[in-house]
Length: 127
Image 1 (cartoon, rainbow, N blue to C red):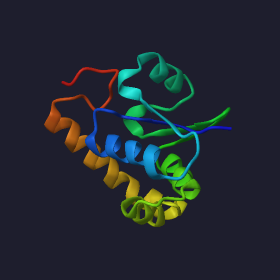
Image 2 (cartoon, rainbow, N blue to C red; image 1 turned 135 degrees about the vertical axis):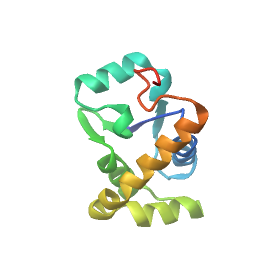
Image 3 (tube, rainbow, N blue to C red; image 1 turned 30 degrees about the vertical axis):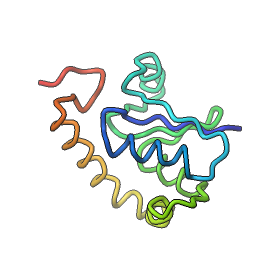
């Protein structure tokens, strides 16, 4: 069964990680989707209790991981040849470590979106 990573395409860090994961993670058939540009997809995720503003989503069939759990699960499945992904895999494949560092990733996302003038939550206008 294939994996789908849904990320915030408005965030340069998220976009870079997602594209790099698609190209060099070693996960066959990894599909990446820009959740910011897909309103219907965001609505489906939100109905399942997963808000893109709170983190990426990883889907495999009916199974879903959100936020730090999504990044940890993706990292455990990687077989990267890319040095940066190798480092990120080591850092984020452990649930406890990912939970500890994930708020920092969300902060970096928040700052980068603010600099770009984009709302943190794609479903709401910036105030």
